[in-house]
Amino acid sequence: MKKIYLFFTLFTLCITFAQNLGSSKNPLSITEKIDGEIKKRKASAASDPVTAKKKLKELKDQSEKIQYPNGAMTSSMGLVLLYYNDGDYKKTIEETRFVEKYAKDLKAFDYVSDIYRLRASSYGEMGLWDEQLKELAKSLINIEDIKAPNRRFYRKSLIYESYAGAYGKKGDVKKQIFYRHKSIVASNQMPENNRETINAKYQNLAFQFAGLGLIYSKLKIKDSANYYFDKALAIHKSKKYDIYINGRAILLSDMAKFYNDNGEYHKAIVFAKKGEGFEKQTSMPYIRKDIYHTLFSSYVEINKQDSSKYYSKLYVYLSDSLLKSEKESMVTPVKQIISDKDRETQSTIKTILIIAALTLLVAVLIGWAYWKRKNRIIHEKYKDLITKISSQQTEHTLEVQVSPRNNQTKTSVTITDETVKALLTKLEKFENLERYLRKDLSLTWMAHHLNTNTKYLSEVIKVYRNHNFTSYINELRINYIVRKLYDNPIYREYKITYLAEECGYTTPRVFVNAFKKETGFTPSYFVEQLKASA
Image 1 (cartoon, helix red, strand yellow):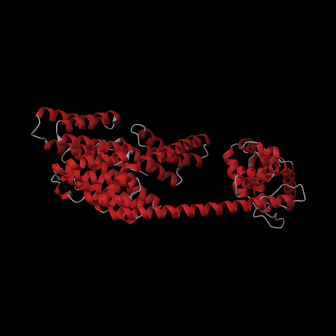
Image 2 (cartoon, rainbow, N blue to C red):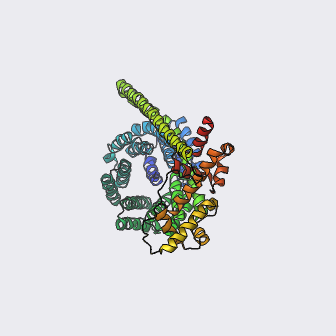
Image 3 (cartoon, rainbow, N blue to C red):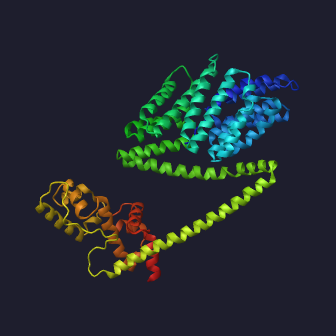
């Protein structure tokens, strides 16, 4: 899950530092006005990021026009933070390069460290982990040159957090836990000498505790997960600290997932809904996606179908949108990486391009071979099915994957032989009369219809049909529609929706999945092959 770092607190600390770097070459009133406007836009960024972004761009242009490097650097850094919070990593990387040139000239070591870490985080979000670690190493080079303890230790805590995130994506749990604890140690070294520092300190502590809670949740160490989640929640609930809304949304989302994974579905829904409310106040699409997934999963488990369908649609739509956005955002950063490498050595770029081309060629060849093999296997399954249909000598229902009926096995439930025989007779009648085509068919309805109970019926189906109830009905329905398609060419002209309804399914998706599971291929493929061989 993509995390939103504590950058607006950082922005406050940056501005405090940057205001001491005023240029004597410009009228004091102009630079003071710019600094004041930047501070004002920082304060409103969380509640109105669109306006803040627009105004910071104007302040950046104005600073360049009057040759005020501190104003250009500070306003540009504000844009970096906003772009990152929006998940626009392409613009984040581009903007850090603008900040970098001013920060190095001004020896603004706070900013130098921050832009490397932010760039690293952006690369990490795009899956470029080697580049991420390189940029993180740069962020520590001048860290000791930051004189103010609060700013120095705060940046250390964020750098260690970034390392934890990087190793988390690499699957190195030990290093992830190690760096989260280092981040906590650095935060605890921050002096509590002003309100901004206190908020920054506890904002990061809450973030690290939540991160550790999530790690232990994934490791199925419930007690430790509860311990760290509770510590994070205590900070968020405390009125002593001003915790940003995005931090609350992230924590509630993580806790909701934790409760869902541990089977506490009602509790998961409560936390997810709270998280959804906070997320609506500050757009964080990746957190929103996690919340939707948890709500969908939890509602499924408690059999709330309408709610599960609603959040399933939201999750799928948002996932598709984010995937498209990520692909588009990759273009500029990759070009920039190539440009940087080109300055180092042209031969390295050529090697990368050759390896990439060979890798692509191998991938294409493997993909083509896999596609050919998959098609051959599917066609073999199709031919086997046609052979079975053609060789049938009776009018009994076709069994796509014939499960031999066991009339000897004893049931694990105590059922008299007479009851078993009676149920098997009724089951045969049920099959012959094609009652399985009912759309409202359920185990309860069928048991009532056969004048028995669900326990006996499930056991008889399990022992004498080698199926559970769902797979038993699916087999009967798919056998039915396969026979219709084979015997009656007019069925081959019908849409999938009609075919699904014809054999008892309420949605085409369920029908297609069941058909593919029974036959090994989709109904569309089956129809195409039947038409081709007609």
